Image (cartoon, rainbow, N blue to C red; front, side, top):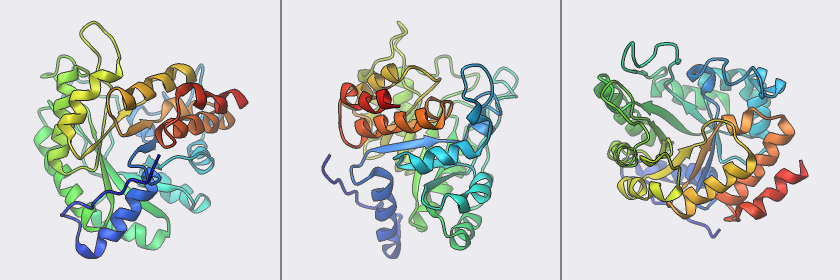
Length: 305
């Protein structure tokens, strides 16, 4: 793809706009499209995603995530600051995105509507960037529209985005409608609504779960409404449960070319594989997201592994 630059939002100060643009350029490899490797599941799903049948034994260690992100052509690797503090010195070449809130899945929606509060302040993030010497390109935050606690999370998210932009950091909002008020989390119209909500917060990207039609179809074209609703906020889809490379790449291609999304944000589909297989799949994802190749062309990386 040709180089695609993006004007920094107006809440980025003049003296930090070059920083924001460089972070955006690095994350999107000059294309405006993002391949985010999501590694925040050690909180969200505890050890369910890292140990068990059909999961590579390599995934039992947190370092597996860093090994993949170091060897694979990801735009950025999103995880909690605590893990970055432990492993970042060994993997300084990775562009990191700090996930600033997370919650486990132990308390079910039927027990209480979800709420996930910010772990670190932006002042702490600024200090970490200064003394770690790592390339921190952005921050991420999850909101749960439809939860009875949504106002708390929306307030935190809006403040976090403003403060992050003040530092020249790119912002990504995980936007998942959830709670007793929500009947179909992946309804296409609702997914579009929460994508637009992230835009009103000022997010640079919004991560959503791919919409599903009332008939249960998962089609890229269903994302068109969400992409329009998000406007200048780029929409990326969660990768979901581990599936075959062929199915994953075909779905990703449709999301970009039928739905108009700006890339993908995948975790389990990558890190539950061995290092060799994970890097190969990441190269195939990069080929579709960044190099604009077809799934058939991109599969050459997987077949080599």
